[in-house]
Length: 207
Ligand code: 5GP
Image (cartoon, rainbow, N blue to C red):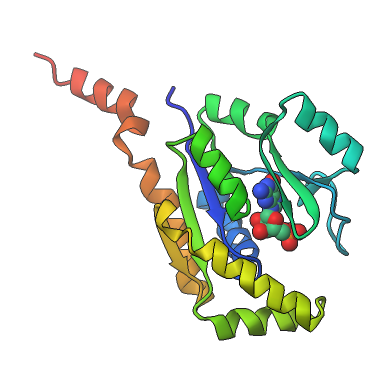
């Protein structure tokens, strides 16, 4: 059986990546055969978030214990909280031929890139600075100086676009959903994913 593909979807905060991913996973043609990697985080759950679904919510000691035993594929400090992708979430599934999608920040994407060079890397851009600023302010959860800081961080992160394979500009959500879905679907036609079937079809042509 061929290994599953690892997809990394990254963006600066406020670019709408989480909504985009949720929409794509709701599509039964995609969600049924793709595992969303549930990260560990020390941030507190938001209203409606459940541990094991959006995140594994843990305290810092538990997070550090996993890190110490080498249990994270990558981890990073994002806006003051620890976030990490555990190997258990990813590696056994890839081995079983299941695709895995990581919703992680740009620092995490950099780390995964160095361990798993064949990962498919997608960056999501907002259509403009104004739109990102508007989205960050609309959340209403951050003071104006925090919004400015996030915009500066966003710029630094977006400067790394050249390291990604695909870039989605999230101007129109439906168009962005279509693009991400297409990237996931196209990978399934990758020749290495089809090796066994291709060879078996070819064998049936043997004289
Ligand atoms: P939020 O707290 O808003 O859910 O996520 C904040 C940021 O952390 C988002 O950019 C999200 O992609 C990123 N993030 C979530 N899980 C992980 C992870 O396991 N590793 C890294 N590096 N970033 C993560």
